[in-house]
Structures are given as C-alpha cells and as structure tokens.
Figure 1 (cartoon, rainbow, N blue to C red):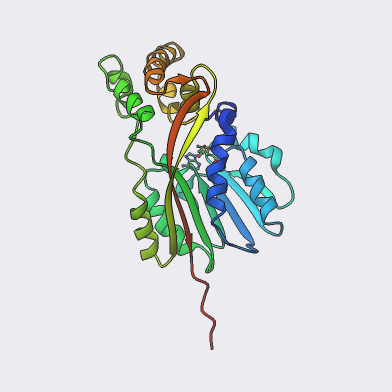
Figure 2 (figure 1 turned 90 degrees about the vertical axis):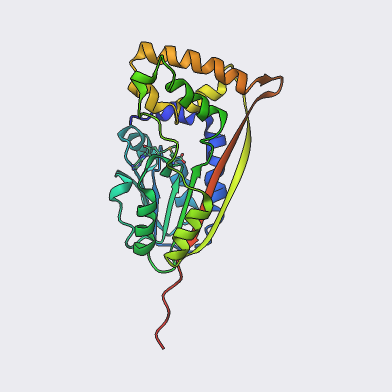
Length: 260
Ligand SMILES: C[S@@+](CC[C@H](N)C(=O)[O-])C[C@H]1O[C@@H](n2cnc3c(N)ncnc32)[C@H](O)[C@@H]1O
C-alpha cells in the first residue's frame, strides 16, 4: 500500500500522544539496540534516540515514501531502512516498539510470539494498535464499501478483524514468558476544519479504498462517505469530537539468570 507522509502528518499531535503513552511504560534504562518497526516518517523514532542517548536506534518501514521522509532525521546512532515486519528478526534487540503498525499485519500474533523468543533477555516489546474497528468511522466505511454501488469494486479491500482483544495479547506474551502490561485508552480528539474525520482516515484507514479506486471514483466514494461522517461526527462550535479507542501492550522479558 502507498502511504502519503504529508496526509498522515496532518494530525501529528493527536497521533503522537499514544506513542508517548506507550513508550512511557517501557522502563529500560540503557538499552543498546532499539528498533521502531513501522516507524513511518521517523519523527517519533528520533524521540527514542533522544530518550536513550547511548542506544543504536533503527527505524524500519515497508513504505519507500515514509523511509525517504525519515532520512532527514538519520545520523549518528539513528538510522532508517526499508523492511517488511513479517521478515523482521528481533535477535539482539533490547527494545522493540511498533506504534500503529500491527493493524496492517494480519499474521502479527505469530510474529509477536517469534519476536518474544528472539528478543534479548531483559528486553522490552511494546506495541499500540487502534481498537476502533467498530466505531462509526470504520463501520460506515465498510457499509458504504459493501453497498450495491461499491461492492463490485471494493470486495475484500477492507479488513476489520486483524487486531485482537488486549487479553489475547496478554495471554500470548505471558505464555511466551514475558511480564505483560496491557490496557486500552479512549482518546476524545477535538478536530477542526470542515471534514476533519475524513481527513484523518485519508491518512490511514481509507488508503486501501483510495488506492483500489481511480481518482474519479475515489472522489465519488469520499463525497458519499463524508456526508455520512458529518452526521456521525457533527461539527460543534468548539470542533468535531472524534473518539478513538486504542490497545497498548508493553511486555518485559526476564533478565537471564546469573550462574552461581
Ligand atoms: C499508521 S503508520 C504509523 C507510523 C509511526 N509508527 C507512527 O506512529 O507515526 C503505519 C506504518 O506502518 C507501515 N507498515 C505497514 N505495513 C507494514 C509492514 N508489513 N512492514 C513494515 N511497515 C509496515 C506503513 O508504511 C506506515 O508507515
């Protein structure tokens, strides 16, 4: 899927807060190897390099557009590269973070199990994924894509069943021997502008639809969808309230036992 760094950055304040809520629960003091998987345009990865001044920090992403944009932050201990999460090997890593990535990776539960095994002893595995697939923004998108007008063009394009319940992740990683801190937070974003929820999803969840349609049809779909969003998320004098539920998991692998 093609990403548009500029569109994604429109709500960078709202999108970065979960990253800091997530990483605030990682209590690593002096990790040597830190990886930000699905790093996007790299701004948040750069914050990791500032937080751990002696660590080597790598940002990896499958999108050439995102990695090109991230290049502006590279230097010294901070580097960026193209990689698919499915191929990532967590051997030698002390802190593995993925913020808003795993909803795009259907096989991620098997990957989490593998990464938990590969991670260094004493290491941390932390991820955040949206849990709002039942919210009006996603439900209306799916319903419209399934309507008579769009079904033939958009069959199989949208997935809504990729992210599991927090308890499933807790169990999976606890069974792999990690200590798990899992929770959900619902953010009430207050957005400005005429169609702010449409602008938000244009940067993420709507991308598969826009990519499957040509420009003309994409504009037609957006027009119908925008009208539905305006009803579901009415503009108020102070802005448009966009509730957004997210799942967080921070798991700590026990340090290796010292030999007597
Ligand atoms: C919603 S953005 C999140 C970016 C960044 N982590 C942040 O919090 O701002 C999702 C990112 O995941 C990347 N991505 C999607 N599928 C991927 C995969 N299979 N492997 C690596 N990166 C992937 C996209 O290119 C995109 O940059």
